[in-house]
Image 1 (tube, protein in one colour):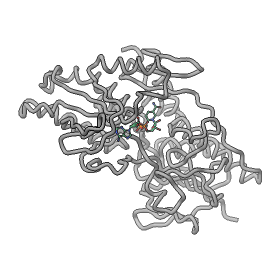
Image 2 (cartoon, protein in one colour):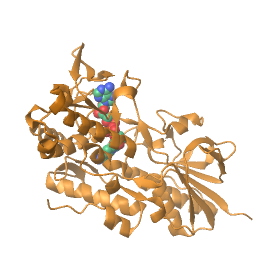
Image 3 (cartoon, rainbow, N blue to C red):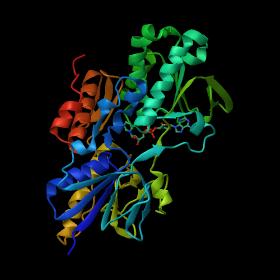
Image 4 (cartoon, protein in one colour):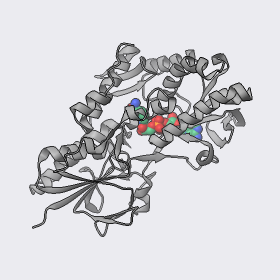
Length: 401
Ligand code: NAD
């Protein structure tokens, strides 16, 4: 009898962790990983690449360096379609890969919400190329000011005030004062504006923590506009609504971080989805497709307590991957699938290298200690999706400066 073919799509936190766990279990199966790049990137650190405080090399590692080639076949190719009724996956190169069990961890894309001009003029932070492009745009504009003397070259608008925006603001406000001499721009003329649609900033933290975070960024020069939904992105400006009136801020650098959606492959493949996410069964399989598991940013798992799906984070993606590997093992042993349970270990947001806010162990933390927690969590996540030597090479150990 031929071995069960397990195919894992995507080499983000969800896919890589599934592979590492399946490797450990030594099951008598064929494992294939398919991902469009030959590297894994830490998506929780893309804002650092975009701000220019880390490089792509700092936050990536080669997939082949951490896989066991005796146990896993890696195909570097883009998935275009999941043929769920034929139990196969179509790739961009025209090939088709059959599966018995499929684990989909294809991650996220930028969400424009259909707002005019976003796709043309907004700079999203969703993968390594987009983060590098956003950094290039920022540096080009700062450099250009000397020639243009145009104030909009020193104006940066960050759209939305979610996790990515806040962490990006933390990094640029650390970096810009350090590079103003080299790039020859007056730091006091830099204008950084963050525009948020909702009436409250950082609602996922306590009042005290969110006040602290906002205060840190305000002291570093960030101006927040709150309750002001963005209506249009132009080549050189952002239009938003304030008290029923449309207003515009001129800017050459426009960072689009208003939220994400699951991979477009999910909708294209005909799964019942909303914003690229499928509401999965308690065992993390897809309704009507018991051989297909969906995890990470393409999945929505209902939090019975809040009545809403859990937010998508690296933390939940890793715990889902552990669960799927366990359920695959149980399935091969003829045992019943177990229901997924999630207990959040907490939430942390950095505010640059040495500052941050965190809620963990039922307590609030802020400042340096929160930044150390953030680095510890990032290092643990790298270890969970790679191996010890990769974690030692790529981890964050600059706790003291
Ligand atoms: P997000 O959904 O967390 O935040 C987007 C923000 O943009 C929201 O505050 C939203 O109200 C605002 N917004 C949306 N449309 C707008 C508009 N038209 N005008 C103005 N504001 C608008 O998205 P994100 O920051 O990209 O994060 C994506 C996911 O990744 C989230 O689930 C988040 O929890 C997770 N994440 C977590 C961390 C962390 O835990 N440290 C870091 C980064 C991302």
